[in-house]
Image 1 (cartoon, rainbow, N blue to C red):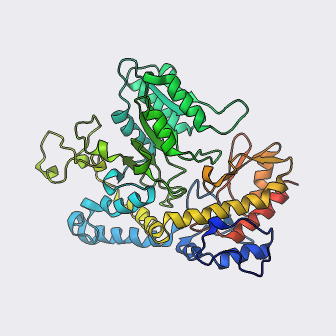
Image 2 (image 1 turned 135 degrees about the vertical axis):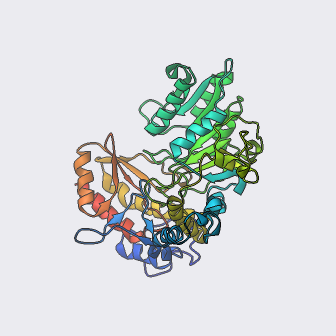
Image 3 (image 1 turned 135 degrees about the horizontal axis):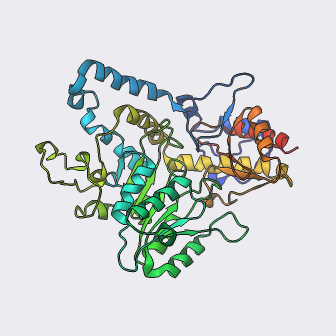
Length: 438
């Protein structure tokens, strides 16, 4: 394929790309016809201390700052300064209902109805709140299922939650592992484990995208497997929200939680998100930890001593939202709305595919790519497992200006995000990977 001829449709239906060229010119050509390239200028990327601009491939750990975030935060600071308490009802975006500003954008982002999503708390706090409602051990049905190798916070949450119920975490928390000498967890193995647990399974908390390997899962298939034995199914979408094209309502799961500081670019410690299926949100009799902000806003100021949950995901809120922390999330969601997740996903498939094409042969015997080769089974992350001198090779990448991260045992994660990374940056990364493998 000649790099002097059009190689992609100008509409950027990148999924159709099948042939790449391992040249800098080809990478620049892809950037020239990328209809999403304009979004890069909407972010402030960390500046290098010296030399060429760095390549920021850690949006899977902390996304860069949207330019609009500063303006939106300053708006709220100005409102606080000028209005004081009156800002709750008279600010440009009244604080009393501020969380509603991000509701529709979150719903579009994860493929849900607006009444099924809410921005609140942190991921782990939301996971505890969901477990309170959806993990209801009774009789034989007491088991909680989670993947072995899940992010430690999830394991800590499940085990401590079970212990707080007076049960034994060692007996009740079941961890399903990949097959021997494998890194990837097969959906068929989850199905088999659900069938084995049968009526002892109360709830499952499974990944949307595995944080170390970058493996993406079929959420509909996993939901059916869990619910098929009468249990509740929830997902940790920390590495999936803003990365893959989620359809939470359609997948049929009961709940999901995610953070907003990774692919959602909402800043360190950003307000997290939560999905509760509409059928559960409407059921105001469900047990939950209650707080004033989950009370129906129509009766909230009557100050009664009886909780009246609003029949939506909002009912799981505990306290009024942190306005200054929500503002950057709004800035980011406005960009996702403008770009749209389907278009971002199409670009992501080719952006990650181009990186894989460029580095696969250069890895040789030094490393292997843990992430599945199929685009349908991964997001924008490629995880490289180095066989030796992993830390030194990682340091060579960072010294070359590739901002990536390291996870034991010897895993380097590269995550080209379609909102702000370029094809030329992917080419630069491949050169650094080749040098690190020498």
